[in-house]
Image 1 (tube, one colour):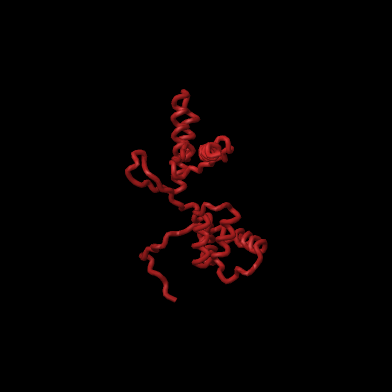
Image 2: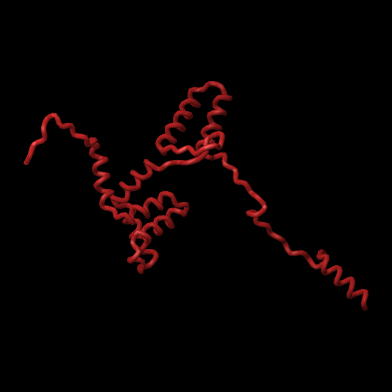
Amino acid sequence: MAKKAPNQANNAIPLDKTREQEIILISKLSGLEKFCLSAYILSDLNEKDKLQTAYKLSRPNQSDAKETSIYVQARRWFTSDPVQAFLTATKRNVIISGKDDEGIKNVNITKEEYEKIINKHLIAADKAGDSKTVRDLAQTQMTFRQWNKTEDKDEETQIKYYLPLKCSQCQLYKSAKMTNSSTK
């Protein structure tokens, strides 16, 4: 066994123990499982459907079971240590994209940076004395959290309901009745 020379520098970045354990746990997952869990994080489905879909897609050959047993197996898989380690590591690095104030270019920030900005505004709102500053900071916070989003409703996406008319109110019925009564 050869010893390293004392003047050789070790280029490896030391990791803390929790990060090492997280990497070991994540390495136990297959590539398909990691892909399905990433889709789970970004999906807009409700929690139960997201979980079942991720589980079924990560195991394409085991889909013959009943729906209830699949859900139980999915919950067991979801609460396992490798899955939880992957989810926490991935959620830490999720990037939030959007447009800047002028709407010109995309702004990419991590979730941690996003939370730091919100916390900075909350602290500034606590320290502010006048109501105008508090209102402005609250408006900024609402913009960050996208609480003030309004959906544009155009004519194509609106659903229109037409109530049935009584015969006495229908123009076609009235004209047909008039022609029938005039011919008699």
